[in-house]
Length: 135
Ligand code: AMP
Ligand code: ZN
Image (cartoon, rainbow, N blue to C red):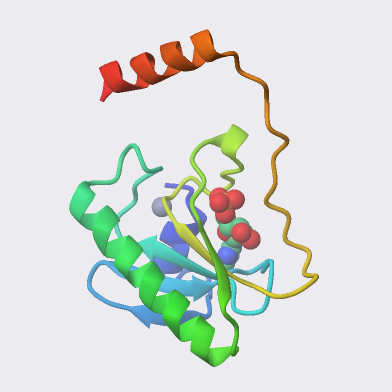
Protein backbone atom coordinates (compact mmCIF):
# COMPACT_ATOMS: atom_id res chain seq x y z
CA UNK A 1 0.00 0.00 0.00
CA UNK A 2 1.23 3.48 -0.82
CA UNK A 3 1.17 4.79 2.74
CA UNK A 4 4.01 6.91 4.05
CA UNK A 5 3.46 5.86 7.67
CA UNK A 6 3.37 2.15 6.73
CA UNK A 7 6.67 2.74 4.92
CA UNK A 8 8.10 4.34 8.07
CA UNK A 9 6.80 1.39 10.12
CA UNK A 10 8.42 -1.05 7.67
CA UNK A 11 11.71 0.81 7.96
CA UNK A 12 11.62 1.86 4.28
CA UNK A 13 11.64 5.57 5.19
CA UNK A 14 13.66 7.00 8.09
CA UNK A 15 12.00 8.70 11.03
CA UNK A 16 12.89 10.25 14.38
CA UNK A 17 11.30 7.83 16.79
CA UNK A 18 10.66 8.94 20.37
CA UNK A 19 8.54 5.96 21.50
CA UNK A 20 7.66 2.42 20.46
CA UNK A 21 5.60 -0.43 21.92
CA UNK A 22 3.79 -3.46 20.42
CA UNK A 23 1.01 -1.38 18.89
CA UNK A 24 2.34 2.15 18.36
CA UNK A 25 5.24 4.36 17.41
CA UNK A 26 5.60 8.06 18.11
CA UNK A 27 7.83 10.07 15.76
CA UNK A 28 8.74 13.69 15.28
CA UNK A 29 6.69 15.35 12.54
CA UNK A 30 8.90 15.92 9.48
CA UNK A 31 7.33 19.38 8.95
CA UNK A 32 6.80 20.42 12.56
CA UNK A 33 4.45 23.20 13.63
CA UNK A 34 6.78 23.71 16.60
CA UNK A 35 9.84 22.11 18.17
CA UNK A 36 8.74 18.73 19.58
CA UNK A 37 5.66 18.29 17.34
CA UNK A 38 5.10 14.53 17.60
CA UNK A 39 2.82 12.06 15.82
CA UNK A 40 1.39 9.01 17.59
CA UNK A 41 0.85 6.30 14.97
CA UNK A 42 -0.69 2.81 15.33
CA UNK A 43 1.38 0.03 13.75
CA UNK A 44 -1.74 -1.35 12.07
CA UNK A 45 -3.06 0.70 9.15
CA UNK A 46 -6.37 2.40 9.90
CA UNK A 47 -7.30 5.19 7.50
CA UNK A 48 -9.01 7.35 10.10
CA UNK A 49 -10.99 7.46 13.35
CA UNK A 50 -13.94 5.72 11.68
CA UNK A 51 -11.83 2.62 10.99
CA UNK A 52 -9.80 2.32 14.18
CA UNK A 53 -11.06 -0.03 16.92
CA UNK A 54 -11.82 1.36 20.38
CA UNK A 55 -9.03 -0.41 22.26
CA UNK A 56 -6.37 0.88 19.87
CA UNK A 57 -7.92 4.35 19.95
CA UNK A 58 -7.82 4.40 23.75
CA UNK A 59 -4.22 3.22 23.82
CA UNK A 60 -3.29 5.91 21.27
CA UNK A 61 -4.75 8.69 23.40
CA UNK A 62 -3.02 7.43 26.54
CA UNK A 63 0.26 7.43 24.62
CA UNK A 64 -0.49 10.94 23.32
CA UNK A 65 -1.02 12.05 26.93
CA UNK A 66 2.28 10.46 27.99
CA UNK A 67 4.09 12.15 25.09
CA UNK A 68 2.43 15.45 26.05
CA UNK A 69 3.66 15.03 29.64
CA UNK A 70 7.18 14.31 28.38
CA UNK A 71 7.15 17.29 25.99
CA UNK A 72 5.90 19.54 28.79
CA UNK A 73 8.91 18.58 30.90
CA UNK A 74 11.41 18.41 28.03
CA UNK A 75 10.67 21.89 26.71
CA UNK A 76 9.57 23.44 29.98
CA UNK A 77 6.22 24.49 28.51
CA UNK A 78 2.63 24.18 29.73
CA UNK A 79 0.43 24.48 26.62
CA UNK A 80 -0.13 21.68 24.11
CA UNK A 81 -2.67 20.85 21.39
CA UNK A 82 -3.73 17.25 20.82
CA UNK A 83 -5.23 17.10 17.32
CA UNK A 84 -6.46 14.43 14.98
CA UNK A 85 -7.68 15.04 11.42
CA UNK A 86 -10.11 12.84 9.48
CA UNK A 87 -10.67 13.45 5.77
CA UNK A 88 -9.37 15.97 3.30
CA UNK A 89 -11.72 18.78 4.38
CA UNK A 90 -10.52 18.31 7.95
CA UNK A 91 -6.92 18.70 6.85
CA UNK A 92 -5.90 15.05 6.77
CA UNK A 93 -3.00 14.59 4.37
CA UNK A 94 -1.76 11.14 5.44
CA UNK A 95 -4.53 8.55 5.37
CA UNK A 96 -3.14 6.44 8.22
CA UNK A 97 -4.70 7.37 11.57
CA UNK A 98 -2.41 9.51 13.74
CA UNK A 99 -2.63 11.88 16.69
CA UNK A 100 -0.72 15.16 16.65
CA UNK A 101 0.89 16.35 19.88
CA UNK A 102 1.81 19.98 19.30
CA UNK A 103 3.62 22.01 21.95
CA UNK A 104 2.55 25.66 21.99
CA UNK A 105 4.68 28.67 22.73
CA UNK A 106 3.92 32.39 22.82
CA UNK A 107 3.60 34.02 19.37
CA UNK A 108 4.14 30.77 17.50
CA UNK A 109 2.84 30.22 13.96
CA UNK A 110 0.20 27.61 14.75
CA UNK A 111 -3.29 28.77 13.78
CA UNK A 112 -6.26 26.78 15.06
CA UNK A 113 -9.21 29.14 14.82
CA UNK A 114 -12.70 29.36 13.35
CA UNK A 115 -15.19 32.13 12.78
CA UNK A 116 -18.47 31.15 14.51
CA UNK A 117 -21.49 30.63 12.24
CA UNK A 118 -24.98 31.79 13.21
CA UNK A 119 -27.48 28.97 13.74
CA UNK A 120 -31.07 29.77 14.78
CA UNK A 121 -32.61 28.03 17.79
CA UNK A 122 -34.99 25.78 15.73
CA UNK A 123 -32.08 24.54 13.75
CA UNK A 124 -30.10 23.87 16.92
CA UNK A 125 -32.92 21.61 18.15
CA UNK A 126 -32.82 19.72 14.83
CA UNK A 127 -29.07 19.38 15.11
CA UNK A 128 -29.33 17.97 18.63
CA UNK A 129 -32.09 15.52 17.58
CA UNK A 130 -30.18 14.51 14.48
CA UNK A 131 -26.98 13.73 16.35
CA UNK A 132 -28.78 12.00 19.23
CA UNK A 133 -30.80 9.78 16.91
CA UNK A 134 -27.62 8.67 15.20
CA UNK A 135 -25.74 7.72 18.33
P1 AMP B 1 -2.39 15.25 8.78
O1 AMP B 1 -2.40 16.51 7.96
O2 AMP B 1 -3.20 15.33 10.03
O3 AMP B 1 -2.73 14.05 7.91
O4 AMP B 1 -0.89 15.09 9.28
C1 AMP B 1 0.12 14.45 8.56
C2 AMP B 1 1.41 14.90 9.16
O5 AMP B 1 2.43 14.02 8.74
C3 AMP B 1 1.83 16.31 8.74
O6 AMP B 1 1.97 17.14 9.89
C4 AMP B 1 3.16 16.09 8.02
O7 AMP B 1 4.09 17.11 8.30
C5 AMP B 1 3.60 14.76 8.58
N1 AMP B 1 4.49 14.00 7.72
C6 AMP B 1 4.41 13.81 6.39
N2 AMP B 1 5.39 13.00 5.96
C7 AMP B 1 6.12 12.67 7.05
C8 AMP B 1 7.28 11.85 7.27
N3 AMP B 1 7.91 11.22 6.28
N4 AMP B 1 7.75 11.75 8.53
C9 AMP B 1 7.13 12.38 9.57
N5 AMP B 1 6.04 13.15 9.41
C10 AMP B 1 5.54 13.30 8.18
ZN1 ZN C 1 -0.48 3.02 6.60
